[in-house]
Image 1 (cartoon, rainbow, N blue to C red):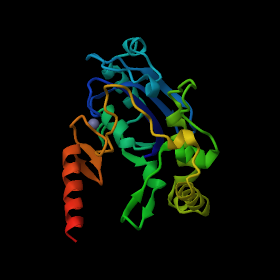
Image 2 (tube, rainbow, N blue to C red):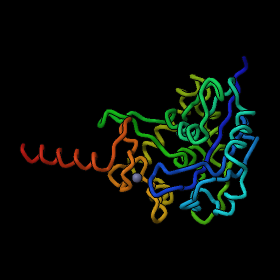
Image 3 (cartoon, protein in one colour):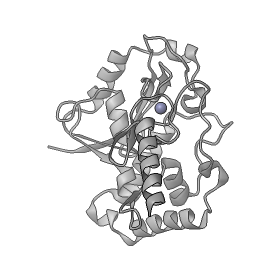
Image 4 (cartoon, helix red, strand yellow):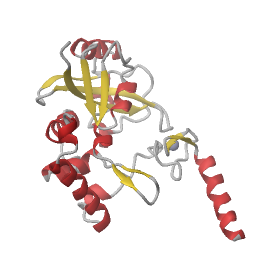
Length: 250
Ligand SMILES: [Zn+2]
């Protein structure tokens, strides 16, 4: 069995105000060399609350001109299959958005965010970096800059390039070059030397919650992904108050 490596990236539009109300509106697939194999807009049958143009680079019209979700999935799977290893930044999200099944549609997945993570001793967890930060540290390129034309292949191409250059195989993963890149990103964090475009959080789109990973800011009520579990804003707030009370008693 020959294992083949791919990366793909899915963009999503908002079908409701909650941070989980998302449906795939485009997908791009690249091979191990970063060559684009397939890239398409995907039509969303349900009502679109916002095309999230600043992220997706698409208007509602662009989305409505896309092929059906089932056709997009079928085409994607025709390239992948049970020998495919899919690589990407937080690739679990993309796999879920395309409703792909491990063992049938693909063999396994590699999250490059985990490959570049750094142990945070203070909090006994891991610090993760965004794809844009990884790309900046590795290649000196600032991605996703507001006002630049969005390139739907960009994420997939950079993901597979980072994987190829820094993470492919256990030797590379722990090589001096890869350790140096992790160290460089850690220093950017400590010295606050990331370019401003990469440190400023995205302001979001009016009326759509974009805080899937931030229960302190989420107001839509849907559970957020937090500390390897799920937590709603109310639960986060309860915990914050409990901690404050506990501290006050001391
Ligand atoms: Zn939310």
